[in-house]
Length: 186
Image (tube, one colour):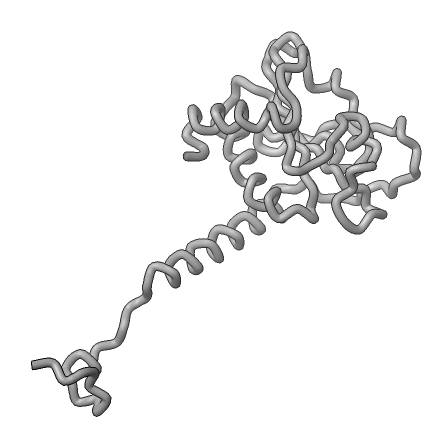
């Protein structure tokens, strides 16, 4: 005989503490994942002083390597890069275009970093889209215009001979497939 909810608090069930539900576990997992990604980003970036954007679109930045992930323009974010420094070296190359103002990039960056760690058969290059003097996603930065970037995260994939295979929307499924094959993402 069920007379409705027991509001007296005398029931055996009311004495038990409720555990965390699926929503709480998901929120905790996402919080841990974001904090981990932020830690990886903050510690993986090369340290040092960065040159200010002088506005010269011909300015380039030398590559900086951190655990097989190359940072194309770490010293001069947003500035043009020399593609020849990275492509046509006998290995396929993936350029990953990133913005510190892009939430989706915050989720993608750890996957790209992991891919660089597990896949030595490719050159993987992170390119910072935003100039230091710009507050927001800087699609009109010199490197953004060099690669015709209209959304981030974005990729450009080159074969071992330096020929462009895919860029932008067409490159994302290719990079996803590579990450799946290397067990970086599901």
